[in-house]
Amino acid sequence: MATTNITVRIEDSLLDQVDDYCKKNEITRSDLIRNSLLEKLREPELLQVSKDDIRGKIESLYKVLDINFETHKFIIAKGVKSISFAYELQDKNKQLIIRDAIGRIVKIISMV
Image (cartoon, rainbow, N blue to C red; front, top):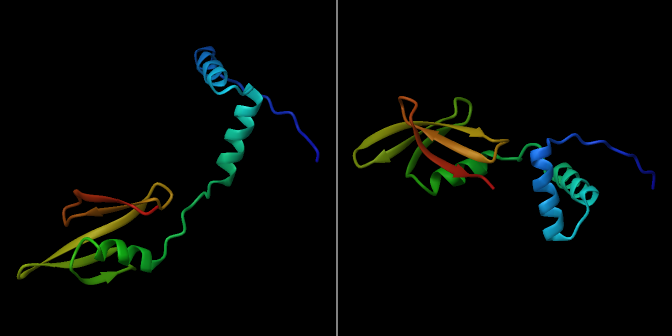
């Protein structure tokens, strides 16, 4: 396995925190940086979310009459009225944001 040296620049104030962390966890700076980098690389850039995932999250909260995946809107039944909402995915598809008709955030749902 080939190895490559990587130089990391860090502010002195943060270096003290890094050293404290390394001392508490009995690891070297190199191990900390390597582990952090590998963990970040393994994390998917964008969470894969299907229409069924979105439908399931919304239907678990509301009595849904219709969901339009093209316009990102859905209609729910509330008593004898119907109410329209919009949804959007944020934070690399990890959060489903539900907004009312005038754009106020009603609910934030984790997709993880």
